[in-house]
View 1 (cartoon, rainbow, N blue to C red):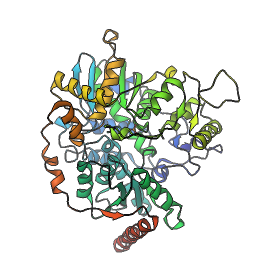
View 2 (cartoon, protein in one colour):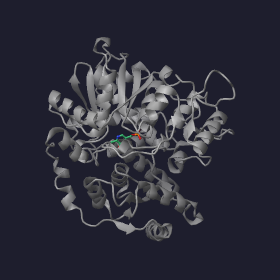
View 3 (cartoon, helix red, strand yellow):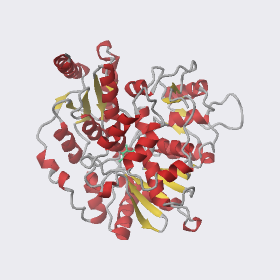
View 4 (cartoon, rainbow, N blue to C red):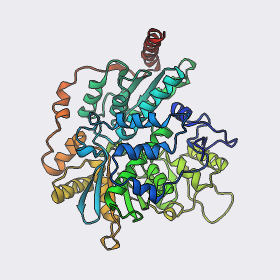
Length: 494
Ligand SMILES: *Cc1c(COP(=O)(O)O)cnc(C)c1O
């Protein structure tokens, strides 16, 4: 089995290795990297060997299938896994259970993915990803400066992952207004050394626009990215599906389960789809969206239409399109890069590709049922339902959940049929501490904070460089970061 990757849009099907894809992120033709020969297999006997295995072992076993020995050797993957999921990084993981499952009622579960350094599921992938990049850069004796934009969860998770690494620096743009005080404080506390926070006097779109604009400047073309389409990030999300599955079925390997996934950019759903393609016995994958229901329409009707994102109380799912969908599209269109290209060109030009009617060759759209035929389903939730979801779980189990998880629980309950006997696992993508205002509206009180998050907002002072919506101001800051890094490199070289 080859670990080589191809771009979803490359008609010439040029292949690159895992380590190159890690550093590149997006392919030069605008496509996303996928394995050249499809997804590797995970057998029931391999699954059986992982019963009771610690998360680090599951991670090594699954992720190892995607990385060639010459890209990152097996021992190194093992070391990275130990480092990324250590007790220090996951202090509230009881008995080393990094992604624990809690039973809410018969056959209805919540799997927590937010016990990491920044209390968001983004930690699950960004931690190991940054360590892998640092290793690969070290092998090449190169350095990389990353530039990203965040509206909330990605920023802290990326910064916690990159902090202190020798080969990487990171500048993160965030909107001056819009992030919660908790998220602002998380990033303020991570600033310094190789981490720089830039607060933009504008909104999240302004931040993203500045990143795009700066990268058009030849002097800054070499900047790396932090975004959800990096292939290494998707790969690192597959293991927790395996971990959740094993906890729920025990030694009943082969029994099917359903997963409900709070969704935005479709990265998490895609990892579930890949886990199932590998052989993990998942019956249905259900995307839960909030009021921003682009994915719901796509899954129910085969109609992909970008929409302006509304601000909601599950803000990490406020998206206008679902970038990672292109990888599933590649499979749906028979792994034909030309068809993907036509589809995505049309989507990028017009913001919409309608479902096709009949079988006419002239239409490039998907069939109405394309996704549902793959046992991919969806549902939506809204603010009032979110509050009810938080209350329901608290009433049942005295357990606190965040608003994104509440979206999943709501959709899960809508789709759950107790007499089928198929376990339903709702993924929890953020800890309630990040969204206390919404939890308080639902319950009238919030959970006591873990020690590491006590008074976080009060401990944050400064930590941001403020700029206007001006690319020249950003260029000055990036210039300083890049030269600092070059200076460090010079000092370190023999
Ligand atoms: C990023 C994020 C999501 C959406 O995940 P995708 O992989 O983009 O679909 C959901 N919930 C939370 C809390 C997030 O931070």
